[in-house]
Length: 178
Image 1: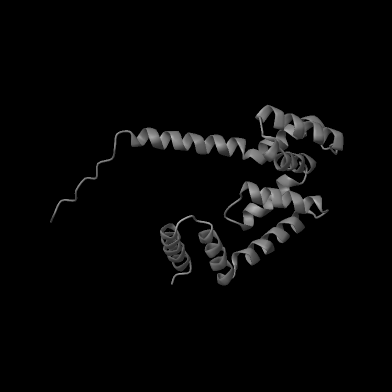
Image 2 (image 1 turned 90 degrees about the horizontal axis):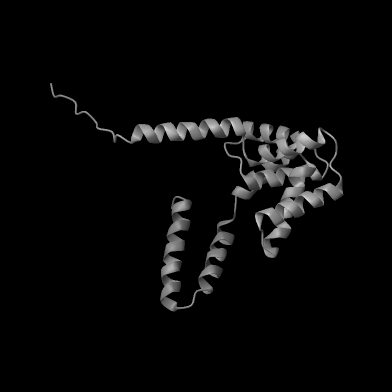
Protein backbone atom coordinates (compact mmCIF):
# COMPACT_ATOMS: atom_id res chain seq x y z
CA UNK A 1 0.00 0.00 0.00
CA UNK A 2 1.32 3.38 -0.87
CA UNK A 3 0.77 6.26 1.42
CA UNK A 4 -1.28 9.05 0.01
CA UNK A 5 0.58 12.29 -0.24
CA UNK A 6 -0.64 15.04 1.96
CA UNK A 7 -1.61 18.06 -0.06
CA UNK A 8 -0.25 21.21 1.46
CA UNK A 9 -2.37 24.31 1.36
CA UNK A 10 -0.96 27.79 1.56
CA UNK A 11 -1.25 29.17 5.08
CA UNK A 12 -2.95 32.30 3.74
CA UNK A 13 -5.70 30.29 2.01
CA UNK A 14 -7.79 30.30 5.19
CA UNK A 15 -7.61 34.11 5.29
CA UNK A 16 -8.66 34.30 1.66
CA UNK A 17 -11.57 31.93 2.28
CA UNK A 18 -12.70 34.00 5.26
CA UNK A 19 -12.50 37.23 3.29
CA UNK A 20 -14.43 35.78 0.35
CA UNK A 21 -17.08 34.34 2.69
CA UNK A 22 -17.42 37.74 4.35
CA UNK A 23 -17.88 39.44 0.96
CA UNK A 24 -20.51 36.88 -0.05
CA UNK A 25 -22.29 37.43 3.26
CA UNK A 26 -22.17 41.21 2.93
CA UNK A 27 -23.45 41.09 -0.63
CA UNK A 28 -26.23 38.69 0.34
CA UNK A 29 -27.34 41.07 3.10
CA UNK A 30 -27.05 44.22 1.01
CA UNK A 31 -28.24 42.97 -2.37
CA UNK A 32 -27.01 44.35 -5.65
CA UNK A 33 -26.77 47.98 -6.74
CA UNK A 34 -30.36 48.02 -8.04
CA UNK A 35 -31.63 46.72 -4.69
CA UNK A 36 -29.70 49.42 -2.85
CA UNK A 37 -31.14 52.13 -5.11
CA UNK A 38 -34.67 50.78 -4.64
CA UNK A 39 -34.26 50.80 -0.85
CA UNK A 40 -33.20 54.45 -0.95
CA UNK A 41 -36.16 55.46 -3.13
CA UNK A 42 -38.65 53.48 -1.02
CA UNK A 43 -37.43 55.18 2.14
CA UNK A 44 -38.50 58.58 0.79
CA UNK A 45 -41.44 57.90 -1.54
CA UNK A 46 -42.98 54.98 0.41
CA UNK A 47 -44.83 53.46 -2.53
CA UNK A 48 -45.96 56.70 -4.16
CA UNK A 49 -45.13 57.53 -7.75
CA UNK A 50 -42.00 59.66 -8.11
CA UNK A 51 -42.81 62.94 -9.90
CA UNK A 52 -40.90 63.69 -13.12
CA UNK A 53 -39.32 66.78 -11.56
CA UNK A 54 -37.97 64.65 -8.72
CA UNK A 55 -36.65 62.02 -11.17
CA UNK A 56 -34.73 64.69 -13.09
CA UNK A 57 -33.44 66.29 -9.90
CA UNK A 58 -32.22 62.93 -8.58
CA UNK A 59 -30.54 62.00 -11.88
CA UNK A 60 -28.83 65.39 -12.21
CA UNK A 61 -27.54 65.29 -8.65
CA UNK A 62 -26.24 61.74 -9.02
CA UNK A 63 -24.40 62.79 -12.19
CA UNK A 64 -22.90 65.79 -10.42
CA UNK A 65 -21.88 63.82 -7.33
CA UNK A 66 -20.37 60.99 -9.37
CA UNK A 67 -18.56 63.41 -11.68
CA UNK A 68 -19.90 61.86 -14.89
CA UNK A 69 -18.66 63.48 -18.06
CA UNK A 70 -21.16 65.19 -20.34
CA UNK A 71 -20.62 62.44 -22.87
CA UNK A 72 -21.70 59.62 -20.57
CA UNK A 73 -24.05 61.55 -18.30
CA UNK A 74 -27.06 61.41 -20.62
CA UNK A 75 -27.29 57.61 -20.75
CA UNK A 76 -26.35 57.18 -17.10
CA UNK A 77 -28.93 59.72 -15.94
CA UNK A 78 -31.48 57.85 -18.03
CA UNK A 79 -30.57 54.66 -16.16
CA UNK A 80 -31.01 56.43 -12.82
CA UNK A 81 -34.44 57.71 -13.89
CA UNK A 82 -35.43 54.19 -15.01
CA UNK A 83 -34.58 52.74 -11.60
CA UNK A 84 -36.32 55.55 -9.72
CA UNK A 85 -39.41 55.36 -11.93
CA UNK A 86 -39.71 51.57 -11.47
CA UNK A 87 -38.67 51.25 -7.85
CA UNK A 88 -41.90 49.48 -6.89
CA UNK A 89 -41.92 46.85 -9.67
CA UNK A 90 -38.26 46.17 -10.44
CA UNK A 91 -37.60 44.08 -7.29
CA UNK A 92 -40.36 41.63 -8.24
CA UNK A 93 -39.17 41.49 -11.84
CA UNK A 94 -35.59 40.88 -10.69
CA UNK A 95 -36.71 38.07 -8.42
CA UNK A 96 -38.73 36.42 -11.21
CA UNK A 97 -35.86 36.78 -13.66
CA UNK A 98 -33.23 35.30 -11.34
CA UNK A 99 -35.43 32.22 -10.86
CA UNK A 100 -35.31 31.56 -14.60
CA UNK A 101 -31.78 32.69 -15.46
CA UNK A 102 -28.41 31.95 -13.95
CA UNK A 103 -27.15 35.52 -14.35
CA UNK A 104 -28.49 38.97 -13.68
CA UNK A 105 -26.47 41.87 -15.02
CA UNK A 106 -26.88 45.62 -14.92
CA UNK A 107 -27.85 45.60 -18.60
CA UNK A 108 -30.55 43.02 -17.99
CA UNK A 109 -31.90 45.16 -15.15
CA UNK A 110 -32.04 48.16 -17.49
CA UNK A 111 -33.86 46.10 -20.13
CA UNK A 112 -36.36 45.03 -17.48
CA UNK A 113 -36.87 48.70 -16.56
CA UNK A 114 -37.49 49.61 -20.21
CA UNK A 115 -40.07 46.85 -20.46
CA UNK A 116 -41.70 47.99 -17.21
CA UNK A 117 -41.76 51.56 -18.55
CA UNK A 118 -43.75 50.28 -21.52
CA UNK A 119 -46.53 49.30 -19.13
CA UNK A 120 -45.72 45.61 -18.76
CA UNK A 121 -46.22 43.75 -15.53
CA UNK A 122 -43.11 42.22 -13.94
CA UNK A 123 -44.09 38.79 -15.35
CA UNK A 124 -44.52 40.23 -18.85
CA UNK A 125 -41.22 42.12 -18.60
CA UNK A 126 -39.37 38.96 -17.59
CA UNK A 127 -41.01 36.95 -20.37
CA UNK A 128 -40.02 39.60 -22.91
CA UNK A 129 -36.43 39.67 -21.66
CA UNK A 130 -36.12 35.88 -21.69
CA UNK A 131 -37.50 35.62 -25.22
CA UNK A 132 -35.15 38.39 -26.38
CA UNK A 133 -32.19 36.58 -24.83
CA UNK A 134 -32.93 33.35 -26.71
CA UNK A 135 -33.17 35.08 -30.06
CA UNK A 136 -30.07 37.15 -29.35
CA UNK A 137 -27.96 34.05 -28.68
CA UNK A 138 -28.66 32.65 -32.14
CA UNK A 139 -26.48 35.15 -33.95
CA UNK A 140 -25.88 34.31 -37.57
CA UNK A 141 -22.29 33.14 -38.14
CA UNK A 142 -22.11 35.17 -41.33
CA UNK A 143 -22.99 38.37 -39.43
CA UNK A 144 -20.39 37.54 -36.77
CA UNK A 145 -17.78 36.92 -39.44
CA UNK A 146 -18.66 40.18 -41.20
CA UNK A 147 -18.25 42.07 -37.92
CA UNK A 148 -14.82 40.55 -37.42
CA UNK A 149 -13.75 41.42 -40.97
CA UNK A 150 -14.93 45.01 -40.52
CA UNK A 151 -12.89 45.28 -37.32
CA UNK A 152 -9.85 43.92 -39.10
CA UNK A 153 -10.21 46.40 -41.97
CA UNK A 154 -9.80 49.25 -39.50
CA UNK A 155 -6.32 48.08 -38.47
CA UNK A 156 -3.37 50.04 -39.82
CA UNK A 157 -0.83 47.59 -41.26
CA UNK A 158 -1.21 44.50 -43.39
CA UNK A 159 0.63 42.31 -40.87
CA UNK A 160 -1.61 43.38 -38.00
CA UNK A 161 -4.63 42.65 -40.22
CA UNK A 162 -3.36 39.15 -40.94
CA UNK A 163 -2.59 38.44 -37.27
CA UNK A 164 -5.94 39.83 -36.14
CA UNK A 165 -7.77 37.85 -38.82
CA UNK A 166 -6.13 34.61 -37.70
CA UNK A 167 -6.89 35.28 -34.04
CA UNK A 168 -10.50 36.26 -34.71
CA UNK A 169 -11.02 33.27 -36.99
CA UNK A 170 -9.61 30.95 -34.33
CA UNK A 171 -11.89 32.52 -31.71
CA UNK A 172 -14.90 32.12 -33.98
CA UNK A 173 -14.06 28.49 -34.72
CA UNK A 174 -13.52 27.74 -31.03
CA UNK A 175 -16.78 29.42 -30.10
CA UNK A 176 -18.68 27.21 -32.52
CA UNK A 177 -16.71 24.06 -31.69
CA UNK A 178 -15.18 23.75 -35.16
